[in-house]
View 1 (cartoon, helix red, strand yellow):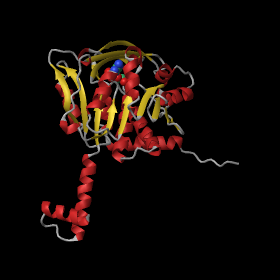
View 2 (cartoon, helix red, strand yellow; view 1 turned 45 degrees about the vertical axis):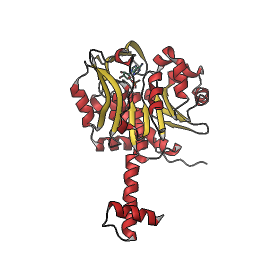
View 3 (cartoon, protein in one colour; view 1 turned 30 degrees about the horizontal axis):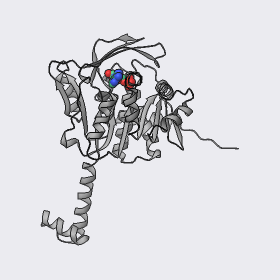
Length: 344
Ligand code: AMP
């Protein structure tokens, strides 16, 4: 074996002569392969949103599940490959802003003469619940997700909120199944595409939904019973997001709960779920560890990212964050939940 590696190494680099050189060459090569294989693919809507909260109202601003998820993940991995679609009404400056966050937009289709996905929502006074006022699918209706060949090395796949049939097509078009597939969805798809939704849920490893959606999907009021029913549908893990009340992680044997950071100002919860998911999968991709224990840490990192998202309207707060700010926020989480206890 060593002989083969040594022969190969020498062919590529004739200055490699002794065993030490060969071993170091082997490790460099292995590290390179590992790095190449750790790519993160994010799929989902890139959109315009109009939002009303008790603190204000916006006209069309930038939103979309994949926008939030890829921005959040960009704080953890060097490059994110994006697959989505927009119309020719979408600003090129925003695409540039995504590129500045190391988000590769080769897989972002721009449809001439068509309009971008548009969503509008109004939050209730508690900011934990909202009404959807409009969902205009526009370019999403006929979206055929092409996966650029350079995206095929995908190890981690974030299927952000999108039409389930399209989410399924992305999985089918990847030559190799990613090491981890995380999927997010929402009530809209439960009401309009339940059959396809159930099929995709059966194909993924982790499903993230909010508490109302978990109840709607399972028909169970108790979140524990809802989780048991949803895990039977196929995913190995389920994350139930509870807004300002934190998040629950389930698999068939274990449960973990993380609170949300109590914040002084919550201006706009839009995108918090997608930002959470992006931070979660970004952390797992960075640490290359998909154990339950590491997913617990991923939930803390995801929650930290989501806590930034809600502090301003739209994507404003999660663009251009400093790495130290992220670290400080995670430390606040650690301080929040740490206590000493002695059982008597
Ligand atoms: P969140 O607040 O995390 O649930 O995500 C809100 C984002 O999801 C907004 O920026 C919307 O553009 C996007 N969105 C809303 N409805 C849908 C939908 N039916 N499918 C895909 N994305 C959606």
